[in-house]
Each structure stands twice: as structure tokens, then as C-alpha cells.
Image (tube, rainbow, N blue to C red; front, side, top):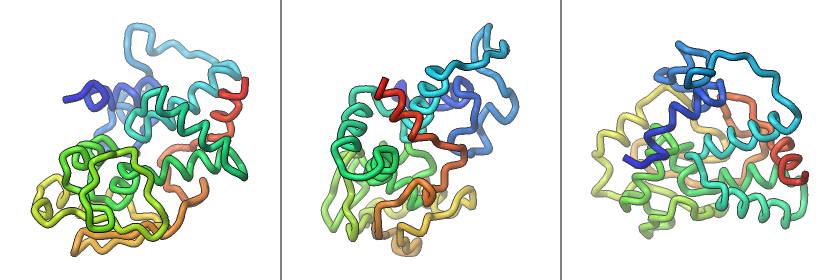
Amino acid sequence: MSKRQESKYKIDRRLGVNLWGRGKSPINKREYGPGQHGQRRKKPSDYGLQLMAKQKLKGYYGNIGEKQFRRIYAEAVRRKGDTGENLIGLLERRLDAVVYRMKFAPTPFAARQIINHGHILVNGRRLNIPSAQIKEGDTIEVRAKSKQMALILEAVASGERDTPDYLEVDTGSLKGRFVRVPQLADVPYPVQMEPNLVVEFYSR
């Protein structure tokens, strides 16, 4: 098990939120941070709020590394339009995010794993790069040999979350289509995301 997967619930406790809205999250029982100083109440500074917003976004998408996240942010700045909206659009276009949104995996961490192991096809071809950017109109499906995997079937059957309307999914064939790049308001985050604060963080 990777360090990223191992620490997914530590992320919840450190940030003080149930980041993925899961029933198993320890934050449902202990609403304070990990460690001996976890119960101290702290009033965050502006910098602290900006950092928290960045950590929430990075953590939500499978605990993306800082170097990779900075690259995504730089691309969001380079594009025309609102940088915060561009950032969300780029994150939601990641293959691991799309697989998670289509409910082919129970968590972003599991989505990354099944992609790495070659269980996902994009436009009929195997693609094992979780950070690959999906385009409008692309089809994403579970390959035939993997359609009976318990992890995938349980995720599809779960009522824990719904598929957003910027994706089309046929749960019977385990195949879907990326319809359009979403705006922040379209994305079903269980917690409030503040990409504007992330922009402020990197603009300091």
C-alpha cells in the first residue's frame, strides 16, 4: 500500500473535514486533528486559510504531489478565463477523477490504482496514466476482463454518491462519456472548495 493511500484518513483529520463524504471517515467520530496537539483550537491566518484551501484540493484528488499540482496551476494561469475555474476544470479532466466520478472506483486512490493496473480503456485503448487529461467526447470504460472485479462492482452499486451531469454513464456496460468540462458549481464536492484562495496562495 502506498503512503498516499495509507494516509487518506489522516488527511481528513488534519484538515478537519470529511473530504470525500465517506461514512468510514474518522472525522465523523473525532472532529479534531491527529496527534497530541490535535484538540487545540487555532484561528487560522489568511495564509493558513489559503494553505488549507490548497491542501483540500490536493488531498481530494488523491493527494497530488506539490510539483504536479504546481504544474496544473501554471496551466490554469496560462489559459484564458478565470484561473480558479480553469484549475477545477483541469483537475476534473484527470483520468483518475473521471473514473472516480463515473463510480468505477470507490475513492480517487482506488481509481488511480485500477488505472495503473491497466483496467481502464479510453476511446478503446488501454491508458494507465492517472493524470492523463480527458477531452470532451472521450469514452471511458472498464476493459472486458475487469468487469467482474468486486471493487468496481461494489463502487457502481454504492448509493454513497451520484454521477454529475457533465458525464454520461451506462452502469450496465461500465462505459461512459466525458460530455463537457465542468464549472466549480457543477462539481459535487462534499465540502466547500475555494479555488480562489488557492490562486491567492500562489499569487503571494
